[in-house]
Image 1: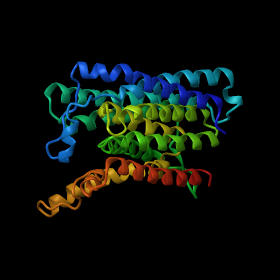
Image 2 (image 1 turned 180 degrees about the vertical axis):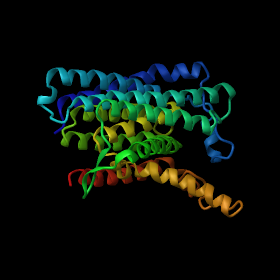
Image 3 (image 1 turned 30 degrees about the vertical axis):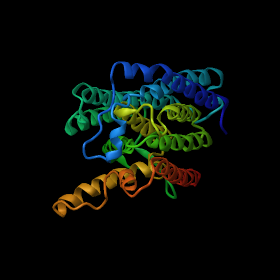
Image 4 (image 1 turned 135 degrees about the horizontal axis):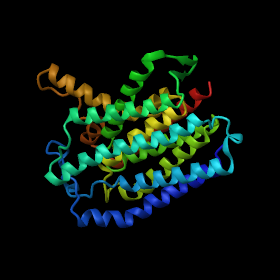
Length: 336
């Protein structure tokens, strides 16, 4: 069942995120923290030049405040007697996951800051990003291990499986891969926020029905924060989340999946992120293998559909529906 603190978390996060935009958007314009559009991107994106960047701070603030406040109040008023899955480790995963997301967001902030200061759409170098990201993932996994976490995970149709020592490096690669996949999804107005909103809803449902009420609260805060941000980011966007926001959301998605001990569910719930990532990888490999030919008109794949004549709103709608279908599949698999 969906508890009262879960509902409150969503409402608080939504309110903070939505209201923060009233101050943040004009502030970002005032300090000229605007985006620089890629030269090789869709030509009509040039009209978005100068749109305030780093709007991700809106939902980051909402999610952090709402999660910490509501999880604390839930544990104070109800505790483990209400939710058997609320062990010490489960609580550690909430706060460690939140810290991990913030750390990824910090990397994104550095990247955005470089872009804004140098007025170009190139921030940190790829190897620098990956180094920071693997260190963050390793720190998160170490905190889980030191808190009693094991190398077991739930696999649908199989049950609880102990992967052994391979679990930790696989988990680190999975986290870094998913974080960058979410980052790639942030390419058109409202896309990343919408897909993550629906993904968080399904994580909330799975966590609630599995007894992870604290993680359900965390998920609800994410959904509320994304919805509040979409008031400002839906087409035509008044602000972009930037790498600050997209890398934070990538960390959040991983934290939710690992927090309910079902990281495998990131595949159906995050199917859009995965498609976006592989469309980019395939495009690069195909380009190199054919000495300059392109498989897609542009990558990641949301730009391909733009080039095919789809509106940004249509892309967001279709990708959201696909996420909902993936979320339903994930919910069913979690109950097997």
